[in-house]
Image (cartoon, rainbow, N blue to C red; front, side, top):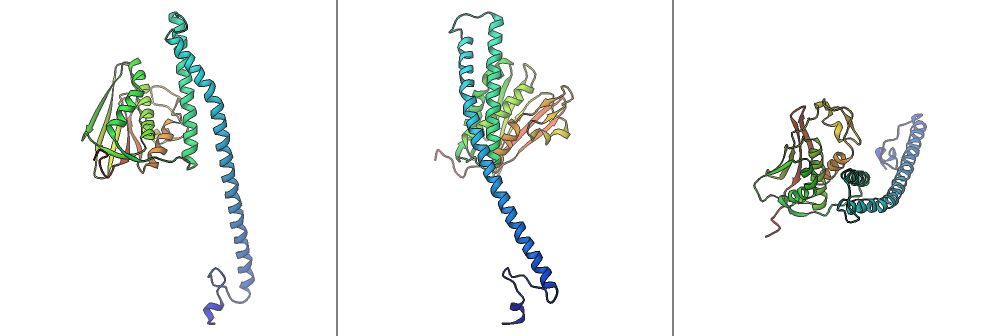
Length: 281
């Protein structure tokens, strides 16, 4: 055995000579204990995360059932299937329905945010035409846009962009961005959806002409329940839609960014990888 081998420990590290051996062994034992403590802590955190997931799923189920009932009865009353309504009653029922839909969206966002941060969201990737994604999202927000007399225009270059994506999740991102744009836009204005293709990805932008967002809040709005002042209205909340959307886009290997200026509107852009081949081929 040579000198080098005789002075190596089990991990391959050199053991100091003489009186330093005891100190070295003490530090090595301390390191082992720290590693064991970290492993135990990691196991505890994993167990706690799993427990929180089960609790969230249970609470979600308990909330969804009565919420669906409230929304269903509100729709029946709005359609006057249960009898005629006065104008005040119709407005009250509409408020109930809209509040119920908002709570359901918030619940879904909380679940999605937890699942994405816990790494529990699985994407079902396939080649999808961007036009289908945009058309599907526009169909979902049609009623909201119609109520504010907002026109949604679509521009694509080229018009046959194909991305590799989870169709349902990307529609969810588009729905979040379009809903935010409609809420921020003045009645009678226009929202534009632009899709363009580069060498390796597609970029999809939602452009509104609302009050805009100050530069210092461009990243803050992607935080959970972020509060910000846009210069026109104070105390606005970003909710969970944007953080959920950013997480879903990043799971696809893309990114979600914002470009905005006060009194000039906002542009939210996200990227997705292009599909290798056209699904129609």
